Length: 585
Ligand SMILES: Nc1nc2c(ncn2[C@@H]2O[C@H](COP(=O)(O)OP(=O)(O)O)[C@@H](O)[C@H]2O)c(=O)[nH]1
Ligand SMILES: [Mg+2]
Image 1 (cartoon, rainbow, N blue to C red):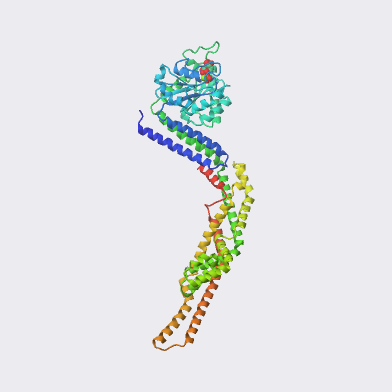
Image 2: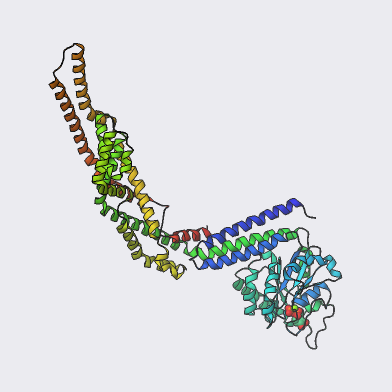
Protein backbone atom coordinates (compact mmCIF):
# COMPACT_ATOMS: atom_id res chain seq x y z
CA UNK A 1 0.00 0.00 0.00
CA UNK A 2 1.44 3.28 -0.99
CA UNK A 3 1.64 6.22 1.33
CA UNK A 4 -1.31 8.52 0.83
CA UNK A 5 0.90 11.57 1.11
CA UNK A 6 3.20 10.31 -1.60
CA UNK A 7 0.28 9.71 -3.86
CA UNK A 8 -1.18 13.16 -3.21
CA UNK A 9 2.13 14.78 -3.99
CA UNK A 10 2.33 12.95 -7.27
CA UNK A 11 -1.26 13.88 -8.05
CA UNK A 12 -0.42 17.51 -7.37
CA UNK A 13 2.48 17.40 -9.76
CA UNK A 14 0.35 15.88 -12.47
CA UNK A 15 -2.18 18.66 -11.95
CA UNK A 16 0.51 21.29 -12.33
CA UNK A 17 1.68 19.67 -15.55
CA UNK A 18 -1.85 19.64 -16.85
CA UNK A 19 -2.30 23.33 -16.04
CA UNK A 20 0.87 24.23 -17.88
CA UNK A 21 -0.19 22.29 -20.95
CA UNK A 22 -3.69 23.77 -20.77
CA UNK A 23 -2.04 27.20 -20.75
CA UNK A 24 -0.24 26.41 -23.98
CA UNK A 25 -3.43 25.04 -25.46
CA UNK A 26 -5.37 28.19 -24.63
CA UNK A 27 -2.71 30.45 -26.09
CA UNK A 28 -2.68 28.37 -29.28
CA UNK A 29 -6.46 28.49 -29.44
CA UNK A 30 -6.37 32.22 -29.07
CA UNK A 31 -4.19 32.57 -32.14
CA UNK A 32 -6.69 31.07 -34.59
CA UNK A 33 -5.10 32.67 -37.64
CA UNK A 34 -1.72 31.14 -36.97
CA UNK A 35 -1.36 27.88 -38.84
CA UNK A 36 1.17 26.04 -36.58
CA UNK A 37 -1.23 26.68 -33.72
CA UNK A 38 -3.51 23.91 -34.93
CA UNK A 39 -0.80 21.26 -34.70
CA UNK A 40 0.22 22.53 -31.30
CA UNK A 41 -3.35 22.37 -30.12
CA UNK A 42 -3.70 18.77 -31.15
CA UNK A 43 -0.39 17.93 -29.47
CA UNK A 44 -1.72 19.53 -26.29
CA UNK A 45 -4.97 17.60 -26.55
CA UNK A 46 -3.05 14.34 -26.93
CA UNK A 47 -0.81 15.16 -23.97
CA UNK A 48 -3.80 16.05 -21.82
CA UNK A 49 -5.43 12.76 -22.79
CA UNK A 50 -2.31 10.93 -21.63
CA UNK A 51 -2.31 12.89 -18.39
CA UNK A 52 -5.95 11.98 -17.82
CA UNK A 53 -5.09 8.32 -18.22
CA UNK A 54 -2.14 8.57 -15.87
CA UNK A 55 -4.11 10.37 -13.21
CA UNK A 56 -6.85 7.83 -13.36
CA UNK A 57 -4.50 4.90 -12.76
CA UNK A 58 -1.82 6.59 -10.72
CA UNK A 59 -1.46 3.67 -8.32
CA UNK A 60 -2.02 0.87 -10.84
CA UNK A 61 0.76 -1.38 -12.09
CA UNK A 62 3.13 -0.06 -14.71
CA UNK A 63 1.91 -0.96 -18.20
CA UNK A 64 4.75 -2.10 -20.47
CA UNK A 65 3.69 -2.34 -24.09
CA UNK A 66 5.39 -4.01 -27.02
CA UNK A 67 4.74 -2.26 -30.30
CA UNK A 68 6.32 -2.56 -33.69
CA UNK A 69 5.87 -3.74 -37.26
CA UNK A 70 4.37 -7.01 -38.21
CA UNK A 71 6.61 -10.05 -37.81
CA UNK A 72 9.25 -8.28 -35.73
CA UNK A 73 8.74 -10.82 -32.99
CA UNK A 74 6.68 -9.01 -30.35
CA UNK A 75 4.56 -12.04 -29.56
CA UNK A 76 7.59 -14.29 -29.58
CA UNK A 77 9.30 -11.97 -27.10
CA UNK A 78 6.28 -11.98 -24.81
CA UNK A 79 6.12 -15.75 -24.91
CA UNK A 80 9.81 -15.99 -24.13
CA UNK A 81 9.40 -13.64 -21.15
CA UNK A 82 6.34 -15.58 -19.97
CA UNK A 83 8.19 -18.85 -20.47
CA UNK A 84 5.15 -20.19 -22.23
CA UNK A 85 5.34 -20.70 -25.99
CA UNK A 86 1.61 -20.58 -26.74
CA UNK A 87 0.80 -17.54 -24.63
CA UNK A 88 0.41 -15.14 -27.54
CA UNK A 89 -0.11 -16.64 -31.01
CA UNK A 90 2.93 -16.32 -33.23
CA UNK A 91 3.56 -17.35 -36.78
CA UNK A 92 4.18 -16.56 -40.39
CA UNK A 93 0.53 -16.14 -41.22
CA UNK A 94 -0.34 -12.42 -40.96
CA UNK A 95 -1.83 -11.01 -38.87
CA UNK A 96 -1.30 -13.40 -36.06
CA UNK A 97 -2.01 -11.15 -33.15
CA UNK A 98 -5.46 -9.70 -33.68
CA UNK A 99 -6.08 -8.21 -30.28
CA UNK A 100 -4.34 -7.05 -27.16
CA UNK A 101 -2.73 -9.78 -25.12
CA UNK A 102 -2.07 -8.87 -21.52
CA UNK A 103 0.36 -10.90 -19.47
CA UNK A 104 -0.06 -10.29 -15.77
CA UNK A 105 -0.11 -11.81 -12.33
CA UNK A 106 -3.75 -11.41 -11.39
CA UNK A 107 -6.81 -10.97 -13.58
CA UNK A 108 -7.74 -7.62 -12.09
CA UNK A 109 -4.34 -6.18 -12.98
CA UNK A 110 -5.76 -5.63 -16.45
CA UNK A 111 -8.95 -3.93 -15.28
CA UNK A 112 -8.05 -0.54 -16.70
CA UNK A 113 -7.31 -2.01 -20.10
CA UNK A 114 -10.46 -4.09 -20.03
CA UNK A 115 -12.54 -1.10 -19.08
CA UNK A 116 -11.20 1.08 -21.88
CA UNK A 117 -10.69 -1.47 -24.64
CA UNK A 118 -13.42 -4.00 -23.98
CA UNK A 119 -13.29 -7.71 -23.27
CA UNK A 120 -13.54 -8.72 -26.92
CA UNK A 121 -10.15 -7.31 -27.85
CA UNK A 122 -8.27 -7.92 -24.63
CA UNK A 123 -7.19 -11.41 -23.68
CA UNK A 124 -5.63 -11.92 -20.31
CA UNK A 125 -2.92 -14.53 -19.98
CA UNK A 126 -0.85 -15.75 -17.13
CA UNK A 127 1.85 -18.32 -16.41
CA UNK A 128 3.86 -19.43 -13.37
CA UNK A 129 6.51 -16.74 -14.03
CA UNK A 130 3.81 -14.07 -13.78
CA UNK A 131 4.02 -14.48 -10.02
CA UNK A 132 7.14 -12.31 -10.10
CA UNK A 133 5.35 -9.49 -11.98
CA UNK A 134 4.61 -7.56 -8.81
CA UNK A 135 4.44 -4.07 -10.21
CA UNK A 136 4.17 -4.37 -13.97
CA UNK A 137 1.92 -5.86 -16.60
CA UNK A 138 3.06 -6.72 -20.12
CA UNK A 139 1.01 -5.97 -23.22
CA UNK A 140 1.40 -7.42 -26.71
CA UNK A 141 -0.26 -5.40 -29.46
CA UNK A 142 -1.66 -6.28 -32.87
CA UNK A 143 0.37 -5.57 -35.98
CA UNK A 144 0.47 -1.98 -36.92
CA UNK A 145 1.21 -2.47 -40.58
CA UNK A 146 -0.40 -5.63 -41.95
CA UNK A 147 -3.16 -5.48 -44.53
CA UNK A 148 -5.76 -5.70 -41.82
CA UNK A 149 -4.05 -3.37 -39.41
CA UNK A 150 -6.42 -0.49 -40.19
CA UNK A 151 -9.02 -2.48 -38.32
CA UNK A 152 -6.86 -2.62 -35.20
CA UNK A 153 -5.42 0.84 -35.41
CA UNK A 154 -7.91 2.50 -33.04
CA UNK A 155 -7.39 -0.29 -30.50
CA UNK A 156 -3.65 0.00 -30.89
CA UNK A 157 -3.72 3.75 -30.36
CA UNK A 158 -5.90 3.40 -27.32
CA UNK A 159 -3.66 0.74 -25.88
CA UNK A 160 -0.65 3.00 -26.33
CA UNK A 161 -2.59 5.74 -24.60
CA UNK A 162 -2.82 3.46 -21.58
CA UNK A 163 0.84 2.49 -21.58
CA UNK A 164 3.60 3.76 -19.37
CA UNK A 165 6.61 2.17 -21.01
CA UNK A 166 7.10 1.47 -24.71
CA UNK A 167 9.25 -1.30 -26.12
CA UNK A 168 9.52 -0.73 -29.86
CA UNK A 169 10.35 -4.10 -31.36
CA UNK A 170 12.06 -3.93 -34.79
CA UNK A 171 13.15 -6.64 -37.14
CA UNK A 172 16.97 -6.65 -37.37
CA UNK A 173 16.78 -7.78 -40.98
CA UNK A 174 14.94 -4.62 -41.96
CA UNK A 175 15.03 -2.26 -38.99
CA UNK A 176 14.77 1.06 -40.82
CA UNK A 177 11.46 0.41 -42.56
CA UNK A 178 10.34 3.94 -43.16
CA UNK A 179 6.65 3.48 -42.53
CA UNK A 180 7.16 1.83 -39.15
CA UNK A 181 9.67 4.38 -37.93
CA UNK A 182 7.42 7.24 -39.01
CA UNK A 183 4.38 5.54 -37.51
CA UNK A 184 6.17 5.04 -34.21
CA UNK A 185 7.39 8.64 -33.98
CA UNK A 186 3.92 9.91 -33.10
CA UNK A 187 3.93 7.71 -30.04
CA UNK A 188 7.53 7.71 -28.89
CA UNK A 189 7.45 11.51 -28.70
CA UNK A 190 5.23 11.24 -25.67
CA UNK A 191 7.72 9.11 -23.69
CA UNK A 192 10.83 10.27 -21.89
CA UNK A 193 14.08 8.46 -22.61
CA UNK A 194 13.81 6.35 -19.49
CA UNK A 195 10.47 4.99 -20.64
CA UNK A 196 11.33 4.19 -24.22
CA UNK A 197 13.24 1.09 -25.26
CA UNK A 198 14.13 -0.20 -28.69
CA UNK A 199 14.47 -3.93 -29.24
CA UNK A 200 16.27 -5.20 -32.31
CA UNK A 201 14.97 -8.73 -32.66
CA UNK A 202 15.92 -11.65 -34.92
CA UNK A 203 19.57 -10.79 -34.42
CA UNK A 204 20.39 -14.44 -34.92
CA UNK A 205 19.78 -13.93 -38.63
CA UNK A 206 22.71 -11.52 -39.04
CA UNK A 207 26.45 -11.88 -38.71
CA UNK A 208 27.64 -10.64 -35.32
CA UNK A 209 30.23 -8.26 -36.81
CA UNK A 210 27.83 -6.70 -39.24
CA UNK A 211 25.30 -6.32 -36.47
CA UNK A 212 27.65 -4.56 -34.10
CA UNK A 213 29.61 -2.50 -36.58
CA UNK A 214 27.07 -1.55 -39.20
CA UNK A 215 23.45 -2.25 -38.33
CA UNK A 216 23.43 -1.04 -34.75
CA UNK A 217 25.25 2.32 -35.20
CA UNK A 218 23.33 2.90 -38.39
CA UNK A 219 20.00 2.31 -36.63
CA UNK A 220 20.99 4.60 -33.77
CA UNK A 221 21.71 7.38 -36.24
CA UNK A 222 18.60 6.73 -38.19
CA UNK A 223 16.36 6.81 -35.13
CA UNK A 224 18.04 9.90 -33.85
CA UNK A 225 17.31 11.74 -37.09
CA UNK A 226 13.82 10.37 -37.64
CA UNK A 227 12.65 10.72 -34.07
CA UNK A 228 14.74 13.81 -33.40
CA UNK A 229 15.96 12.48 -30.09
CA UNK A 230 18.70 10.19 -28.89
CA UNK A 231 17.62 6.65 -28.15
CA UNK A 232 19.28 5.55 -24.96
CA UNK A 233 18.65 1.83 -24.87
CA UNK A 234 18.71 -0.58 -27.79
CA UNK A 235 18.68 -4.28 -27.01
CA UNK A 236 19.88 -6.71 -29.71
CA UNK A 237 18.10 -9.96 -29.04
CA UNK A 238 16.96 -13.22 -30.48
CA UNK A 239 13.60 -13.79 -28.87
CA UNK A 240 13.07 -17.11 -30.49
CA UNK A 241 16.18 -18.53 -28.87
CA UNK A 242 14.50 -18.01 -25.47
CA UNK A 243 11.30 -19.84 -26.22
CA UNK A 244 10.84 -23.11 -24.40
CA UNK A 245 11.09 -24.89 -27.76
CA UNK A 246 12.62 -22.64 -30.40
CA UNK A 247 12.17 -25.28 -33.10
CA UNK A 248 14.55 -23.64 -35.53
CA UNK A 249 13.54 -24.44 -39.08
CA UNK A 250 16.01 -26.32 -41.25
CA UNK A 251 18.98 -24.07 -42.13
CA UNK A 252 17.86 -21.18 -39.91
CA UNK A 253 19.94 -21.94 -36.86
CA UNK A 254 21.32 -18.83 -35.10
CA UNK A 255 24.48 -17.48 -36.72
CA UNK A 256 26.08 -16.51 -33.38
CA UNK A 257 25.45 -16.30 -29.66
CA UNK A 258 25.47 -12.55 -29.18
CA UNK A 259 22.24 -11.55 -27.41
CA UNK A 260 21.09 -8.83 -24.94
CA UNK A 261 18.07 -10.83 -23.81
CA UNK A 262 19.32 -11.16 -20.22
CA UNK A 263 19.65 -7.40 -19.86
CA UNK A 264 16.19 -6.88 -21.34
CA UNK A 265 14.76 -9.47 -18.98
CA UNK A 266 16.50 -7.70 -16.11
CA UNK A 267 14.88 -4.39 -16.98
CA UNK A 268 11.36 -5.82 -17.12
CA UNK A 269 11.53 -8.15 -14.15
CA UNK A 270 14.01 -6.03 -12.22
CA UNK A 271 14.31 -2.27 -12.41
CA UNK A 272 10.84 -1.55 -13.80
CA UNK A 273 9.24 -4.12 -11.52
CA UNK A 274 9.85 -2.16 -8.31
CA UNK A 275 7.44 -0.67 -5.83
CA UNK A 276 6.62 3.04 -6.32
CA UNK A 277 8.42 2.99 -9.63
CA UNK A 278 5.04 3.38 -11.32
CA UNK A 279 4.15 6.63 -9.54
CA UNK A 280 7.53 8.16 -10.20
CA UNK A 281 7.52 7.15 -13.80
CA UNK A 282 4.08 8.67 -14.33
CA UNK A 283 5.20 11.95 -12.81
CA UNK A 284 8.35 11.81 -14.90
CA UNK A 285 6.31 11.23 -18.00
CA UNK A 286 3.98 14.11 -17.17
CA UNK A 287 6.99 16.37 -16.91
CA UNK A 288 8.24 15.02 -20.19
CA UNK A 289 4.91 15.93 -21.79
CA UNK A 290 5.24 19.51 -20.56
CA UNK A 291 8.76 19.67 -21.91
CA UNK A 292 7.59 18.21 -25.21
CA UNK A 293 4.92 20.87 -25.66
CA UNK A 294 7.29 23.60 -24.56
CA UNK A 295 9.89 22.49 -27.10
CA UNK A 296 7.37 22.11 -29.81
CA UNK A 297 5.99 25.60 -29.20
CA UNK A 298 9.47 27.08 -29.08
CA UNK A 299 10.43 25.27 -32.26
CA UNK A 300 7.60 26.79 -34.22
CA UNK A 301 8.31 30.29 -32.95
CA UNK A 302 11.88 30.95 -31.93
CA UNK A 303 13.31 31.62 -35.35
CA UNK A 304 10.48 34.04 -36.02
CA UNK A 305 10.34 35.85 -32.73
CA UNK A 306 11.95 39.02 -33.99
CA UNK A 307 9.87 39.14 -37.14
CA UNK A 308 6.69 38.58 -35.16
CA UNK A 309 7.54 41.39 -32.78
CA UNK A 310 8.37 43.63 -35.71
CA UNK A 311 5.03 42.95 -37.39
CA UNK A 312 3.21 43.57 -34.16
CA UNK A 313 4.95 46.90 -33.85
CA UNK A 314 4.03 47.72 -37.40
CA UNK A 315 0.37 46.96 -36.79
CA UNK A 316 0.35 49.10 -33.65
CA UNK A 317 2.08 51.91 -35.49
CA UNK A 318 -0.41 51.69 -38.32
CA UNK A 319 -3.26 51.82 -35.91
CA UNK A 320 -1.85 54.88 -34.22
CA UNK A 321 -1.48 56.54 -37.58
CA UNK A 322 -5.07 55.70 -38.41
CA UNK A 323 -6.24 57.15 -35.12
CA UNK A 324 -4.24 60.30 -35.72
CA UNK A 325 -5.63 60.56 -39.25
CA UNK A 326 -9.12 60.20 -37.84
CA UNK A 327 -8.37 62.87 -35.25
CA UNK A 328 -7.16 65.20 -37.97
CA UNK A 329 -10.39 64.67 -39.83
CA UNK A 330 -12.30 65.49 -36.67
CA UNK A 331 -10.31 68.66 -36.29
CA UNK A 332 -11.06 69.66 -39.87
CA UNK A 333 -14.75 69.62 -39.04
CA UNK A 334 -13.90 71.49 -35.83
CA UNK A 335 -15.32 74.87 -36.93
CA UNK A 336 -18.81 73.51 -36.36
CA UNK A 337 -17.85 72.72 -32.82
CA UNK A 338 -16.70 76.19 -31.90
CA UNK A 339 -20.02 77.56 -30.66
CA UNK A 340 -20.49 74.53 -28.54
CA UNK A 341 -17.01 74.65 -27.12
CA UNK A 342 -17.61 78.23 -26.17
CA UNK A 343 -20.81 77.37 -24.38
CA UNK A 344 -19.20 74.51 -22.49
CA UNK A 345 -16.24 76.67 -21.50
CA UNK A 346 -18.54 79.39 -20.09
CA UNK A 347 -20.45 76.77 -18.20
CA UNK A 348 -17.27 75.53 -16.57
CA UNK A 349 -16.32 79.10 -15.70
CA UNK A 350 -19.77 79.78 -14.27
CA UNK A 351 -19.14 77.12 -11.66
CA UNK A 352 -15.95 78.81 -10.53
CA UNK A 353 -16.57 82.56 -10.74
CA UNK A 354 -18.09 84.59 -7.94
CA UNK A 355 -19.09 88.19 -7.39
CA UNK A 356 -21.03 90.43 -9.76
CA UNK A 357 -18.88 89.41 -12.75
CA UNK A 358 -19.45 85.79 -11.76
CA UNK A 359 -23.22 86.35 -11.95
CA UNK A 360 -22.89 87.67 -15.46
CA UNK A 361 -20.69 84.72 -16.44
CA UNK A 362 -23.41 82.40 -15.12
CA UNK A 363 -26.17 84.18 -17.01
CA UNK A 364 -24.13 84.28 -20.16
CA UNK A 365 -23.31 80.58 -19.85
CA UNK A 366 -27.01 79.83 -19.41
CA UNK A 367 -27.77 81.90 -22.41
CA UNK A 368 -25.24 80.04 -24.53
CA UNK A 369 -26.31 76.69 -23.21
CA UNK A 370 -29.97 77.44 -23.54
CA UNK A 371 -29.93 75.59 -26.79
CA UNK A 372 -29.00 72.48 -24.91
CA UNK A 373 -32.67 72.14 -24.12
CA UNK A 374 -35.62 73.91 -22.61
CA UNK A 375 -35.78 71.48 -19.75
CA UNK A 376 -32.20 72.07 -18.74
CA UNK A 377 -32.94 75.79 -18.54
CA UNK A 378 -36.00 75.27 -16.41
CA UNK A 379 -33.89 73.62 -13.79
CA UNK A 380 -32.50 77.02 -12.88
CA UNK A 381 -34.18 78.61 -9.87
CA UNK A 382 -34.11 82.25 -10.92
CA UNK A 383 -37.44 83.11 -12.64
CA UNK A 384 -36.00 85.91 -14.77
CA UNK A 385 -33.23 83.71 -16.06
CA UNK A 386 -35.77 80.99 -16.60
CA UNK A 387 -37.78 83.21 -18.82
CA UNK A 388 -34.71 84.39 -20.64
CA UNK A 389 -33.50 80.88 -21.08
CA UNK A 390 -36.86 79.76 -22.36
CA UNK A 391 -37.05 82.53 -24.92
CA UNK A 392 -33.50 82.20 -26.11
CA UNK A 393 -33.69 78.43 -26.28
CA UNK A 394 -36.72 78.76 -28.50
CA UNK A 395 -34.85 81.16 -30.73
CA UNK A 396 -31.51 79.40 -30.74
CA UNK A 397 -32.69 75.92 -30.03
CA UNK A 398 -31.38 74.11 -33.04
CA UNK A 399 -28.03 75.62 -33.55
CA UNK A 400 -26.62 75.63 -30.05
CA UNK A 401 -27.88 72.26 -29.05
CA UNK A 402 -26.26 70.63 -32.04
CA UNK A 403 -23.02 72.52 -31.51
CA UNK A 404 -22.79 71.57 -27.85
CA UNK A 405 -23.35 67.90 -28.46
CA UNK A 406 -20.91 68.04 -31.29
CA UNK A 407 -18.24 69.71 -29.20
CA UNK A 408 -18.46 67.15 -26.48
CA UNK A 409 -18.67 64.13 -28.78
CA UNK A 410 -16.10 65.29 -31.29
CA UNK A 411 -18.20 66.57 -34.13
CA UNK A 412 -19.49 64.78 -37.16
CA UNK A 413 -17.69 61.45 -37.09
CA UNK A 414 -18.26 60.21 -40.62
CA UNK A 415 -15.11 61.75 -42.16
CA UNK A 416 -13.02 60.53 -39.25
CA UNK A 417 -14.29 56.97 -39.55
CA UNK A 418 -13.62 57.01 -43.25
CA UNK A 419 -10.13 58.34 -42.74
CA UNK A 420 -9.40 55.62 -40.20
CA UNK A 421 -10.43 52.87 -42.57
CA UNK A 422 -8.57 54.34 -45.49
CA UNK A 423 -5.34 54.60 -43.55
CA UNK A 424 -5.53 50.97 -42.47
CA UNK A 425 -6.62 49.78 -45.89
CA UNK A 426 -3.69 51.38 -47.61
CA UNK A 427 -1.03 49.81 -45.45
CA UNK A 428 -2.65 46.46 -44.79
CA UNK A 429 -1.68 44.41 -47.88
CA UNK A 430 1.97 44.87 -46.99
CA UNK A 431 1.55 43.82 -43.39
CA UNK A 432 -0.76 40.95 -44.30
CA UNK A 433 1.90 39.64 -46.66
CA UNK A 434 4.39 39.59 -43.81
CA UNK A 435 1.91 37.80 -41.60
CA UNK A 436 1.28 35.19 -44.25
CA UNK A 437 4.99 34.59 -44.58
CA UNK A 438 5.02 34.06 -40.81
CA UNK A 439 2.52 31.24 -41.29
CA UNK A 440 -0.67 33.15 -40.72
CA UNK A 441 -3.69 32.06 -42.69
CA UNK A 442 -4.11 33.86 -46.02
CA UNK A 443 -7.49 35.00 -44.78
CA UNK A 444 -5.71 37.71 -42.73
CA UNK A 445 -5.44 39.56 -46.02
CA UNK A 446 -9.11 40.36 -45.70
CA UNK A 447 -9.05 43.57 -43.76
CA UNK A 448 -12.73 43.66 -42.99
CA UNK A 449 -12.33 40.80 -40.57
CA UNK A 450 -9.82 42.81 -38.60
CA UNK A 451 -11.23 46.32 -38.56
CA UNK A 452 -13.47 47.19 -35.66
CA UNK A 453 -17.00 47.84 -36.78
CA UNK A 454 -18.07 51.43 -37.28
CA UNK A 455 -20.04 51.59 -34.10
CA UNK A 456 -17.18 50.44 -31.94
CA UNK A 457 -14.77 52.72 -33.73
CA UNK A 458 -17.10 55.67 -33.29
CA UNK A 459 -17.54 54.83 -29.63
CA UNK A 460 -13.80 54.64 -29.15
CA UNK A 461 -12.96 57.85 -31.00
CA UNK A 462 -15.76 59.68 -29.22
CA UNK A 463 -14.83 58.52 -25.78
CA UNK A 464 -11.15 59.36 -26.16
CA UNK A 465 -12.09 62.79 -27.54
CA UNK A 466 -14.54 63.33 -24.72
CA UNK A 467 -12.13 62.55 -21.94
CA UNK A 468 -9.33 64.60 -23.48
CA UNK A 469 -11.66 67.51 -24.13
CA UNK A 470 -13.03 67.41 -20.60
CA UNK A 471 -9.59 67.54 -19.06
CA UNK A 472 -8.40 70.32 -21.32
CA UNK A 473 -11.51 72.44 -20.73
CA UNK A 474 -11.33 71.85 -16.99
CA UNK A 475 -7.70 72.83 -16.88
CA UNK A 476 -8.30 75.93 -18.95
CA UNK A 477 -11.30 76.95 -16.88
CA UNK A 478 -9.28 76.55 -13.70
CA UNK A 479 -6.50 78.77 -14.98
CA UNK A 480 -9.04 81.37 -16.14
CA UNK A 481 -10.61 81.45 -12.69
CA UNK A 482 -7.69 82.34 -10.46
CA UNK A 483 -8.60 84.16 -7.24
CA UNK A 484 -6.59 87.27 -8.10
CA UNK A 485 -8.11 87.44 -11.57
CA UNK A 486 -11.61 87.24 -10.13
CA UNK A 487 -10.75 89.83 -7.53
CA UNK A 488 -9.35 92.12 -10.20
CA UNK A 489 -12.45 91.90 -12.36
CA UNK A 490 -14.91 92.21 -9.49
CA UNK A 491 -13.07 94.99 -7.71
CA UNK A 492 -14.23 97.96 -9.85
CA UNK A 493 -17.90 97.03 -9.54
CA UNK A 494 -17.64 96.05 -5.90
CA UNK A 495 -15.59 99.16 -5.13
CA UNK A 496 -18.13 101.40 -6.79
CA UNK A 497 -20.99 99.64 -5.06
CA UNK A 498 -19.19 100.03 -1.74
CA UNK A 499 -18.52 103.68 -2.36
CA UNK A 500 -22.13 104.51 -3.23
CA UNK A 501 -23.41 102.41 -0.41
CA UNK A 502 -21.06 104.17 2.01
CA UNK A 503 -22.18 107.62 0.86
CA UNK A 504 -25.83 106.70 0.86
CA UNK A 505 -25.71 105.16 4.35
CA UNK A 506 -23.63 108.02 5.68
CA UNK A 507 -26.02 110.72 4.42
CA UNK A 508 -28.96 108.74 5.67
CA UNK A 509 -27.46 108.56 9.14
CA UNK A 510 -26.69 112.27 9.05
CA UNK A 511 -30.26 112.80 7.87
CA UNK A 512 -28.79 114.47 4.86
CA UNK A 513 -31.19 113.37 2.09
CA UNK A 514 -29.48 112.71 -1.25
CA UNK A 515 -31.21 113.82 -4.44
CA UNK A 516 -32.89 111.08 -6.50
CA UNK A 517 -30.60 111.99 -9.41
CA UNK A 518 -27.74 110.73 -7.27
CA UNK A 519 -29.16 107.18 -7.10
CA UNK A 520 -29.86 107.03 -10.80
CA UNK A 521 -26.35 108.19 -11.45
CA UNK A 522 -24.92 105.64 -9.06
CA UNK A 523 -26.96 102.80 -10.52
CA UNK A 524 -25.95 103.64 -14.06
CA UNK A 525 -22.28 103.98 -13.08
CA UNK A 526 -22.30 100.63 -11.32
CA UNK A 527 -24.07 98.98 -14.23
CA UNK A 528 -21.60 100.42 -16.74
CA UNK A 529 -18.52 99.39 -14.78
CA UNK A 530 -20.05 96.00 -14.17
CA UNK A 531 -20.79 95.46 -17.85
CA UNK A 532 -17.42 96.85 -18.87
CA UNK A 533 -15.61 94.43 -16.57
CA UNK A 534 -17.57 91.57 -18.05
CA UNK A 535 -16.81 92.66 -21.59
CA UNK A 536 -13.12 92.79 -20.72
CA UNK A 537 -13.37 89.32 -19.29
CA UNK A 538 -15.10 88.11 -22.42
CA UNK A 539 -12.16 89.32 -24.46
CA UNK A 540 -9.81 87.27 -22.32
CA UNK A 541 -12.08 84.25 -22.56
CA UNK A 542 -12.16 84.62 -26.32
CA UNK A 543 -8.42 83.98 -26.29
CA UNK A 544 -8.47 81.23 -23.72
CA UNK A 545 -11.47 79.41 -25.14
CA UNK A 546 -12.58 78.94 -28.74
CA UNK A 547 -10.09 78.07 -31.42
CA UNK A 548 -7.09 77.85 -29.17
CA UNK A 549 -8.94 75.51 -26.81
CA UNK A 550 -9.96 73.33 -29.72
CA UNK A 551 -6.41 73.23 -31.01
CA UNK A 552 -5.05 72.40 -27.61
CA UNK A 553 -7.55 69.61 -27.11
CA UNK A 554 -6.65 68.03 -30.43
CA UNK A 555 -2.96 68.47 -29.69
CA UNK A 556 -3.33 66.65 -26.40
CA UNK A 557 -5.39 63.94 -28.06
CA UNK A 558 -2.74 63.27 -30.69
CA UNK A 559 -0.05 63.17 -28.02
CA UNK A 560 -2.09 60.72 -26.01
CA UNK A 561 -2.49 58.47 -29.01
CA UNK A 562 1.22 58.58 -29.71
CA UNK A 563 2.07 57.70 -26.14
CA UNK A 564 -0.56 54.99 -25.89
CA UNK A 565 1.04 51.56 -25.59
CA UNK A 566 -1.85 49.44 -24.52
CA UNK A 567 -4.94 50.21 -26.41
CA UNK A 568 -5.57 48.89 -29.86
CA UNK A 569 -8.72 48.33 -31.78
CA UNK A 570 -8.33 47.00 -35.22
CA UNK A 571 -6.33 44.06 -34.37
CA UNK A 572 -7.23 40.92 -32.77
CA UNK A 573 -4.07 40.27 -34.80
CA UNK A 574 -1.99 42.06 -32.19
CA UNK A 575 -3.53 39.86 -29.51
CA UNK A 576 -2.77 36.83 -31.60
CA UNK A 577 0.85 37.79 -32.08
CA UNK A 578 1.11 38.45 -28.36
CA UNK A 579 -0.26 35.01 -27.60
CA UNK A 580 2.15 33.41 -30.04
CA UNK A 581 5.08 35.23 -28.47
CA UNK A 582 3.96 34.17 -25.03
CA UNK A 583 3.98 30.55 -26.21
CA UNK A 584 7.76 30.62 -26.30
CA UNK A 585 8.36 32.74 -23.22
N1 LIG B 1 14.99 -16.21 -36.54
C1 LIG B 1 14.20 -15.64 -35.66
N2 LIG B 1 12.87 -15.65 -35.91
C2 LIG B 1 12.05 -15.06 -35.01
C3 LIG B 1 12.57 -14.44 -33.84
N3 LIG B 1 11.51 -13.92 -33.15
C4 LIG B 1 10.40 -14.24 -33.84
N4 LIG B 1 10.72 -14.91 -34.97
C5 LIG B 1 9.77 -15.38 -35.96
O1 LIG B 1 9.17 -14.28 -36.63
C6 LIG B 1 7.84 -14.58 -36.94
C7 LIG B 1 6.92 -13.49 -36.41
O2 LIG B 1 6.95 -13.49 -35.01
P1 LIG B 1 5.76 -12.84 -34.14
O3 LIG B 1 6.20 -12.99 -32.74
O4 LIG B 1 4.48 -13.43 -34.53
O5 LIG B 1 5.91 -11.39 -34.60
P2 LIG B 1 4.89 -10.19 -34.25
O6 LIG B 1 4.08 -9.94 -35.43
O7 LIG B 1 5.82 -9.03 -33.97
O8 LIG B 1 4.13 -10.59 -33.06
C8 LIG B 1 7.55 -15.91 -36.32
O9 LIG B 1 7.62 -16.89 -37.32
C9 LIG B 1 8.64 -16.09 -35.32
O10 LIG B 1 9.00 -17.46 -35.15
C10 LIG B 1 13.97 -14.46 -33.63
O11 LIG B 1 14.50 -13.94 -32.66
N5 LIG B 1 14.73 -15.09 -34.59
MG1 LIG C 1 2.17 -10.74 -32.76
